[in-house]
Structures are given as structure tokens and as C-alpha cells.
Length: 151
Picture 1 (cartoon, helix red, strand yellow):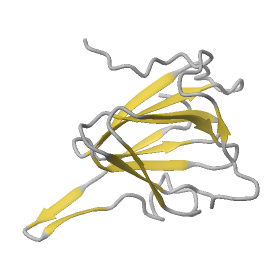
Picture 2 (cartoon, helix red, strand yellow):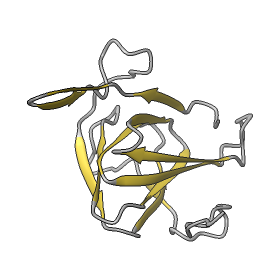
Picture 3 (cartoon, rainbow, N blue to C red):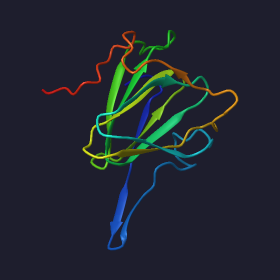
């Protein structure tokens, strides 16, 4: 696993009324601090990536559909420089992925309907000076192919 990346397995508590799933708590070992909470969506087959942050930690939970979340470590001082991690998040795998600063990340909707990610980043979005650094989804400098892998 890429240095600094952590996974939290989420507990779903169902009853006759529906279900409850806690995502991130202030008393979790992985909690950094609260910046904001937002929802992002992707339609089937759509790739959103790549980008990284210099200060912000992201905490992704897919609450509808399934997303393939991919991370790439380009940090020169990292023991996992050059590593790629692939996670499948969503209805069939309720996990939270914590993404540290300077790690490229992106995602692709792999369900047959829109997928929704809730992100709880450590920092609020700064409209006047965004902490967001982008690369094209199919950037040849990042060793990842977004195509489906039939094994």
C-alpha cells in the first residue's frame, strides 16, 4: 500500500426501517481535521482524474454504485514512490479510503448507474487559491490504464 494511505472498513447497521453507516468520526485513529463535506458523482464508465493536493487529506466513501479509486505515488521522498493502488468502493464494499497530500488520485464509475462519492477533506476548498493540481486522465507519466481488466 502507498505510504500514508489507510483504509477503514465501514460497518453497516440495518434494521426494518433502513440502514445506518458511519463514515468518519472525530475519534477515529485516521481522523485529521474537518474542512468540509461534499458529494461528487460519475456516470457509468466516466473517469475523473488525476489530481493531488499539497495540504489536504481526502477521505472517500462511495455511497451509491461502485467506484474504482486509483492512487499513484509520485513523491520523491516516499518509500512507495511509483506504486499504484486500486480500490473498489461502494455498495458491495463499504470502505473509506484516506488519501494523503501529494498522492495523485482519480476514480472511474464501474457500476451500470451513477455512482456517488462523499468526501470529507481535511481542508475547506479555497476558491481564490485552490489546493488542487491536475494531470490528464490518460497522462503517460502516470503508469495506469483506466480500461477494464478482464482476467
